[in-house]
Structures are given as C-alpha cells and as structure tokens.
Amino acid sequence: MQLAQADVELRALERKFDIVVIVSMFFAFIGGYHIHQMLLAGDWSFWIDWKDRMWWPVVAPIADIAFPAAIQSILWTRFKMPIGATFSTVGLFFGQWMNRYWNFWGWGTYPLNFVFPETLIPQAVVLDGVLMISNNFVVTALVGGELWGWLFYPANWPMIAPYHVPVEYYGQLMSMADLIQYEYIRTSTPEYIRMVETGTMRSFAGGVLGVSAFFSGFVSTCMYFLWWFFGKFFGSTKFVKHAAV
Image (tube, rainbow, N blue to C red; front, side, top):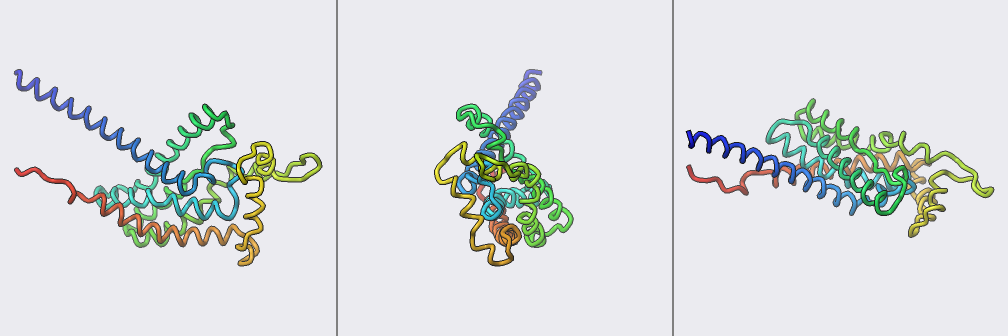
C-alpha cells in the first residue's frame, strides 16, 4: 500500500517537473528568438516610422525565418507535426508584446501604437501549410520560402497604412510617419525614410517594394535550407547518452 502511494506521488512529481521544464524551455525559446530578431531587425520592428518599403521587407523576413525553419525541421522530422513555423511566430509575437508593454510603454512611456511589432503569423501558416501538403522540405523551401518574403509586406500593410496618410504640419505636407519622426526625435531617424525612398533599388522597376519582396523571398529560401539543417542537426538525439538496460 505504501509502495503504491509512493509510486503515485513519484509520477505526480515527474509530471510537475516535466511541466516546469516545458514552460522554461518555451520562455527560453521566446527569449532566444526575440534576441535574434532584435539584433538583426530590431529597429524596423521597434518603431512604426521605420517600417519603410525597401529595407524593412528585405531584412525582417530574412532574419525571422531562421527559428521557424529550425523548429519546423525538428517537429516535422521527429513528430510529423506541421506547426513549427506557426508555433515559433506566435511565441515571438507573445514575447514582442511583453517587451513592448513592459519596456516601451511601462518604462519609456512610448504609445503602444507607435512601437507595436510586425506580424509573421500569416506567412508562418502558409509555410506550415506548404510543408503539410508537399511533405517535402525542398518544395517548402522553394515555394514557402519565396512566399514568406512576398507576403510579409501585404500581411502587415493594414496595420501600417494609417501612418501613410498625408497630413499638413506648419504648412508642410508630410505623412503621419514623418510627423512622428519630428515629434519623437531619435538618432538619425528624421533622415532615414527619405534616404531609403531615394535608394538605388528604384532603378530596377521604378518602385522599391516589388524588388525588395523578390530579393527577400530569394534569400529567405536560402536561409530556410540552412536553418532546416541546423534544426535537424541540433534536434538529433545522438548527443543524449542512453542508459544501459
């Protein structure tokens, strides 16, 4: 009777330990993905007036496809679960909003509609859908990776469109994003939008957005291959020592 009771308590303790490990790993994953995103595309993500039409659609998708590809590789090759990309981006979205609320709004008193993050969830759903339908990571890289870059700007456009509305400010016509730059001065930002809008990418087709999306999709495809194999390598159990039976 005592042995049976001890066995029940041991199993309950194991379940609690598993829950603590899973929750800890989830927050560690969010922290790692968030730091990766902040280091490579942070300024475009932090500020609404930095979300331009040339560099933001290039840099952000290329940097952000890394973790979704790696987690997708682990969950698909080990468990046949086509949710890796969606799981990653939802976790990043959760972490970004924690950062915006506690740091930017709580400590810096920046309005949340000035610092809200971009979303990657629609592209992630497409990436998972391509993997589930094709059952092939090469097809997912070629089709899903290209769509990842192409869909980034349209998926975020409804949120940033109001900041392209023209306004008159002391007799000068400018966009709402330009007005925010003048009111919230940060290093180099007043010149930033104008610099990218006169960039050399316009010489390809007269507009920067299509070229940026195509280039972003192409590099995202290459990045997907790289991080798929990273996930497959580090998700292997060959690093775990198995106890002798």
